[in-house]
Every structure is written in structure tokens, then in C-alpha cells.
Length: 180
Image (tube, rainbow, N blue to C red; front, side):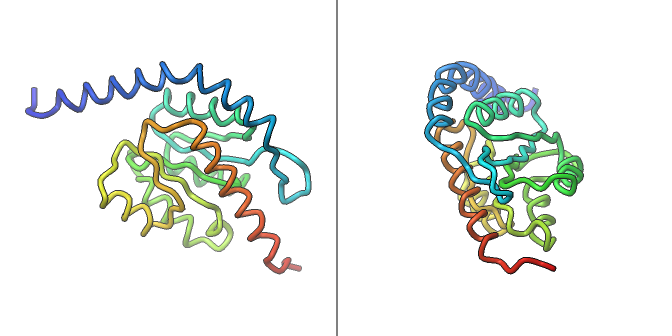
């Protein structure tokens, strides 16, 4: 057993328990939020924001996707950066939520790739991470992220941020000249 690893395990377990315990009460809040808020898509139809959620941890993906869907969002999920890039090309979202620490490609690396691509550079990125040191926030900002949140997060706060970023993104898209 390595020195210092027990704290990580306890933190991980506490985090998983926290997600499980707070999942059910938050669903009532998100149902209320869905009734209060609509999002007008770029196609002119009222719908929830399209979100691409990228996280290698299956349980976290499932819980967060459920929270977003209960909040009225349309959610696609990916378990790594490569799968996310494929889904991004197939159906660009209004907002992306990225885990920072994933195998093969970090959320920071994925964000760098997205922000260099003209087709996707304006899609707002939210980083959700277990890491909350000042340098993590700085790295997220430098990668092109709009928001950096530390897990566990408040469900209603995440939903409000997703809606705000999606609406801002829609307004920015409306001001751009249409390509012929």
C-alpha cells in the first residue's frame, strides 16, 4: 500500500456517496427548472440545450446525464476524447461538459483541439473535475474553457450555467453572417 493513497480512496468513496445521496432531491429542483425555462434552438424550435457530456467514469456520466435530462437538456455522452470528437462532428452540441482527467486524452487536450477547429471553436466548454487547485482553473481557462467546476457540484448551478452558456452561444451565432 502506497503512502497517501488511502485519503484518495476515502475522498473518492465520499464523492460517490455524495452523488448518490443528493441525486434524488435535486431531481425535484430540475423538474421545476425545466418548467420555468425553455431554450430556443438555432433552428427556431423550442428545446432544451444540446449537451455533449464527456467523462470516463460511467456512474458519474449516468448521474450527470440524468440531472441534465431532468433539467430539459438533450444529452449525448462520450467516455473519452476520441469518442467525443466523433460525436461532435456528427451532431455539434450547444455546450460541452468535459472531465479533466481521462485516459488517452485529457479534457484540457480535447478543449484545445475543439477551440482550434473553426466549426466548433464557439461551443462553450464547462470543465467538471475533482481537481480544484488554482493552477487547474488557470489551465482550464488557458485551454479555452468558459467555466471550471469542482466535483461534487450543485445540480441546479450546473443546469443554470449550461442554459446561460447555451443562450449566449445562440445569441453569438445569430450575429454571425450566414455562409452561402
